[in-house]
Image (cartoon, rainbow, N blue to C red; front, side):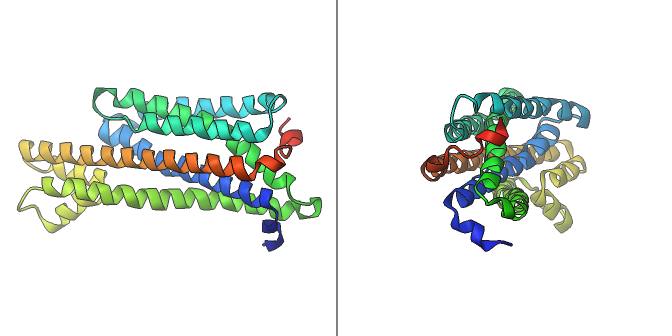
Length: 253
């Protein structure tokens, strides 16, 4: 690892922005797929189809970025994308009830579209801020920051979500349920679904409802955390990357 690269403010700021963008993108997606199948009860194919808007908007945003960057500096585009993604996460936090699917699709599409230029332009800035002879090290660090951000997002947001879920579902576990069944129901929403299917109709329905409500609450909290993270990232990018706004323009075009 070429530690000297971190002396460049543009490099360090772009790397941090890239890491935090992957943090929210990977972290919240862990909840989305489970919500579609385990809360809304969609099959694998139908759930996959409802994630297509998320993927399509990322493709659209990535392809629009080189067009927009011809007319605007990269930093305002990144900041605008981060703010738009924050709006998407706020929309995502409104899941629940009969509008859950609509809010999830709209929110995920918005944050995906907003994050697309961030991924594209931060990579340009990371490579553009490094001397040519250090381009290999810069590229390796860029890839590492992406993997680390995704892993941290899954680990941290997943842990927060699990804690919220366990707290919310605990009171709904029927008295007399075996230790294994109780642990399974508290552990994951999937475990609660299996245990609920083995209980009498009323007890199973109550456990299932409480488990789905607890998981939905964990998704809402995760979405709010992601909104806060991207807003802070937008402020950092605006303050630290502005003097190097020219970076990223040539290769993005």
